[in-house]
Image (tube, rainbow, N blue to C red; front, side):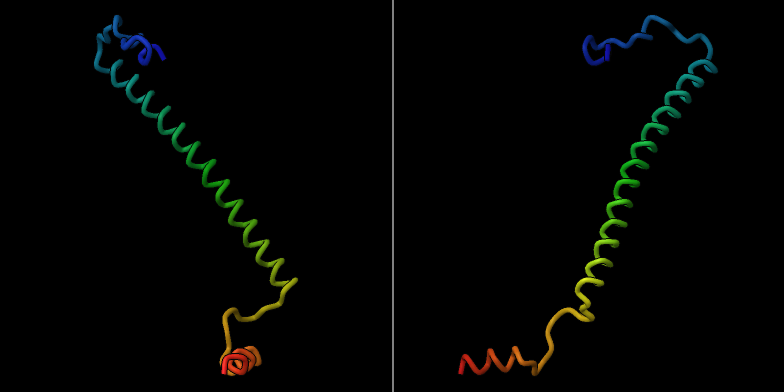
Length: 88
């Protein structure tokens, strides 16, 4: 937060003497970033999966309530005869 408000990082004054120390802190920040990103991704995926499973469950319940085997239209049906009869 201090970087956003003042423009200076807290660790600017401290110089890392050893390359091993620099690499350790870089690796630590990288692992923290990966952990946060994977947690966010997993929580979004979990919510999407739950919503998808609920949608499948709703569709199954609707099939039980309204047992429709095919969706669409069929040729030479009573509805077609009615529409053709009323037009001409």
